[in-house]
Amino acid sequence: MITLATLALSGLLACGNKTTDDSAGGDTDTDTDTDTDTDTDTDTDTDTDTDTDTDTDTDTDADGTSYSGTVGLDAADRTSGTSDTCTGTVSLVVAPPAVTGTASCTFAGPFASFGEASGPIDGTIDTKGNVTAIWNTNPSPLIAEMSGTATATDVALSYSGTVDGGGMTIDYTGTMTATAD
Image (cartoon, rainbow, N blue to C red; front, side, top):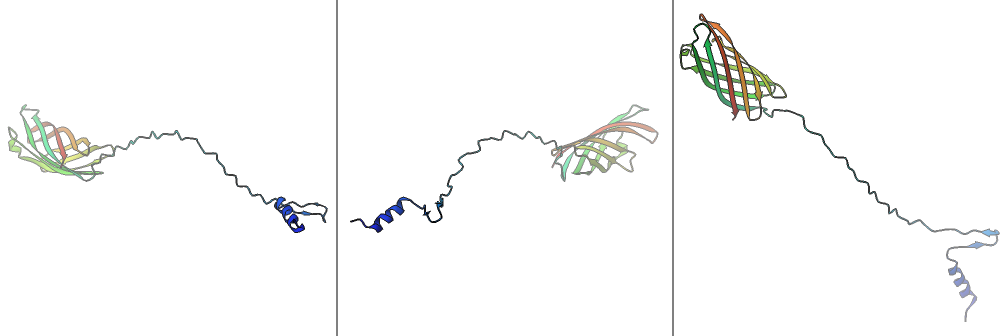
């Protein structure tokens, strides 16, 4: 047997959450639906930018590096034509912007009476590895103005000039080459 209460309950369940207020004379449905949609669009763009930068820094990487090597100096007297070669050693430290060290060489032939040419080297290095330096062999009259390059592995310097003294005019050319210790 179906009772009036059972029918009312089934009618209420069939209508869901809707209610009708006939006394107000209108439909007062209340929507309790919530939006549960999700965005399924995925970004499929790809970044095609590639980095083509190149390192143009020409740092010599010779910061605080010690070098040792050889000195060679060819000398010739303009008046007599006498010539000789001075050979020896060089020690350098490259610590930008400074280049410092010592060098010495000795003549073995006609200029042996000149004794040893020895003294400090003082110079600078730029960011491209270019070196300018002076080798001062005081009291000898040789003050060689040198130029060259330095890298992390080696230093190469060259110089030339003329020295007057003792009734002689001596033209000279020379090199200093050294490798990192």
